[in-house]
Amino acid sequence: MNQFVNLIILVTRPEHDAGTRYLSCWMKEIISEANKKGIQVIDLHKEKASRKNFESRMDKLSPDLILLNGHGSAYEMTGHNNEVLICHEDNHFLLKKKITYAIACDCAKILGKGVADKETVFIGYKDKFVINLNRSFLSKPAEDKRAKRFLDPSNEVGMALLKGHTASEASSKSKEAFRKQIISLLSSTSSDPDITEDIKILFWNMTNQVCLGNGELKLC
Amino acid sequence: MTESEDKSNNPATDEEIRNLVLSRLSTLSFDTMKSIGDMGTFGRDELIAHVKANDEIGRVVQDIEMEWLKAIKEGIVSSLYEPVC
Image 1 (cartoon, chains in turn orange, purple):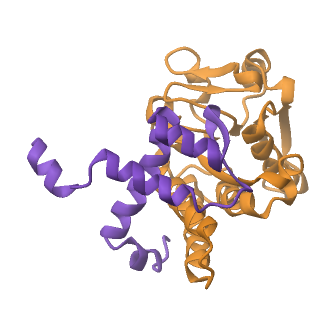
Image 2: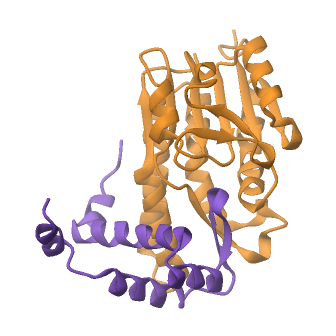
């Protein structure tokens, strides 16, 4: 029997600037993987990534995993056009008893800490989430090999969770993917300044990713 | 930590750090763009302008540089060759 069949994933994918377009594009890989496993995916894409939709889907469907893509601050996570979807001490309780991965700046600082407990896990970043891009691919993010260096390791959290790993393992696997990417760039013989810059950003994202709450939680 | 202890651990002045960051940024390719959350996506010359202005965006770029320099000083490169899990 398919162990994933009754699971529900909610994904927010705003697309109102370059950063959100890249995150949204990369999230397709996880959505596709979830679909292959027969998992129901609620995809709040573009304008659908609104507070009204988010709250109503969370309330009615109670998804098992929430993948938040967008902009954040210590207290908030936003959706399309930076509309606030979740705010600490306002509606943050919606993330209780869930597994959440927020690909956004600063969210783990207060929002993540506020929801984390023995029945909840929040994976996110405690400082800015930064990606280096290639200007030539702004309109076709999927082809941007430079952005791939940053977004593949980040996606590893979702991919590992879909394989049945615990949240803590998923975060470790993501950090391992960041580390491997750094090693690969350090080992390159190129003295390209862009590579040195990418190493710094990979290291920054790797060290700022945290897994808060019960890291033993998993999808099935 | 007292101000003097802090100074001895990190003897570089803000101005020196800013100059180092500016010199590194100036070597980046024209194609490089950096997406920093809702602060926006910036090209090389825009990043240089923000660092020169010492504004919030410029300070994020400086923080990233400082974290890396601190990590190198602490021997991070050799530890990166050991798997995380």
